[in-house]
Image (cartoon, rainbow, N blue to C red; front, side, top):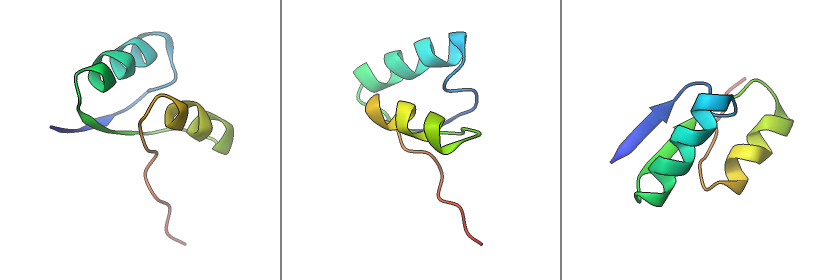
Length: 52
């Protein structure tokens, strides 16, 4: 299942991201910075692509 997760680096969001990833779901996680984007990538999710 494709899932859009907001707050993927917060306390609850990170736990949800772990659970979704272990369940085999394709997760797009909203983040506020490039640093946070790397954190969600490390957990197997992708941040949304920005368009100029």
